[in-house]
Image (tube, rainbow, N blue to C red; front, side):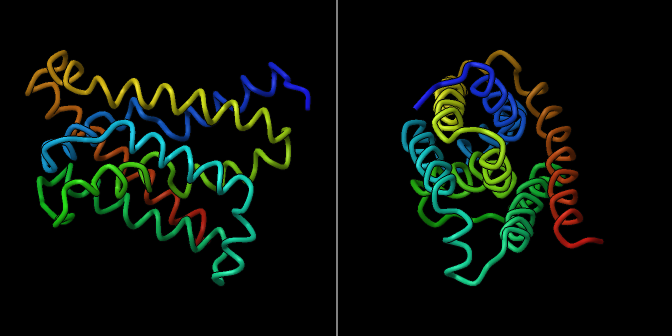
Length: 188
């Protein structure tokens, strides 16, 4: 079992770009506003657990339940689409009866460990050694935890107007990501 710094850096950077926790800050703040709080530890641990599980069992798990990676990605694109619509239009589509679950759905899955992340893990597995991918996942989850834990500070830094601008801008970006995921996996 040899660790390769180059592979670790590559997987860390690829996952960092796909997870895009910095871009998701307005979504996280919005979810926290709706739910009252976000359980940073729970969200980070669940997302890490999902990614590690998917790294080892992803394709097999999807086959067992009769799904392909494309269908999984399309389902994730719909969830992301509706979250983005809430952000851009100020609607409330996602109604959470139990606010404590917001840390799991939609934060840990599909925002952090979503279809894009899962399909990326399957792609990385074809190029890099598993232990190096695991280190990349863990490094990203430490950063995600740090960002989730400091959303109050980030909210104060941006202010109400700044957050509204960010929410709308990142809502449009999330819409584009949802549409791209949908198009790439449907062939439209």
